[in-house]
Length: 356
Image 1 (cartoon, rainbow, N blue to C red):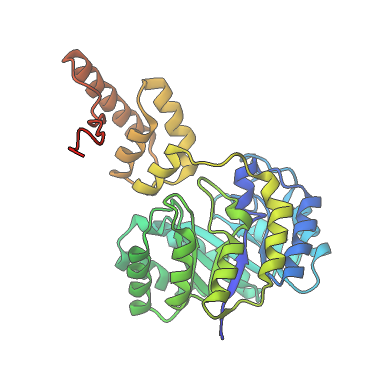
Image 2: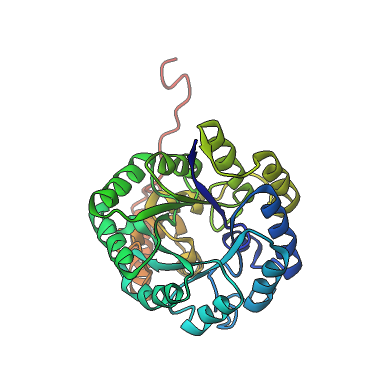
């Protein structure tokens, strides 16, 4: 059987979905159950990584040291690790995490800002820590540019480079194109992290495995930012069905998801802004700005998301947001003055109107 490592990031990415409210006690309990199920890599801490709470960025229920010590005290064999975003995290934050015994570090930068990861990767590698380069918003550049960024990350010493579908916007054919471009450019090991805005995160993860990924991410019950992540339980049982050896007991993992993640989920369904984010390639971290502008200018946030992503899918500049919102507002006013229906209104088709 082909071996593949599944990393669980419930305690990190999942924290976005619950207001960063995981406690140190919950961290200990979930770490233990994940390890008992056979999960060998467990990511913990604030959703935005180490340093976020200390900088006052949506402070979490526990500090970085409290999360780290909770995991260290609970685990016997599995490795625990943290995420860091240069600028949110400082090198001292990473050094403290290394001193607390992390087994891996994940350095996240926008795909257009890979150079910022170098000192963090250097620090981790000097201490012998397994390190991944997570190229956030990978879809913001063409596949060849992504491949070049991945090769640069590999040259810095990253053990694994990730294709990161931050907005859940990639279809399987896109994942194939990006990963084949990477393979044509570099021999670095690669992983995949997918969000589920368009409902294909689990399949994209399986496809990444088929294309040669050595590491893939998931969170229990898909708990995560925006529309959520690929679901660890579904990934594991599906990989097993396809002949992969993950070393994880799928049934035990399903029970862990029912106990720890299911009670945290709200009612079913999905938000329109999440689906449009997947459609346009919009990172949900920028959503509060968009919602505030939509309310201020009286325009639909979904329209702002689409228009903004035609300008830049890595960042949201205040000037761009204001200009686009004003243009949308002016356009709506002109249509209303001319007695036109809303631009997005479509004819209603019934069986009779279709001649059925």
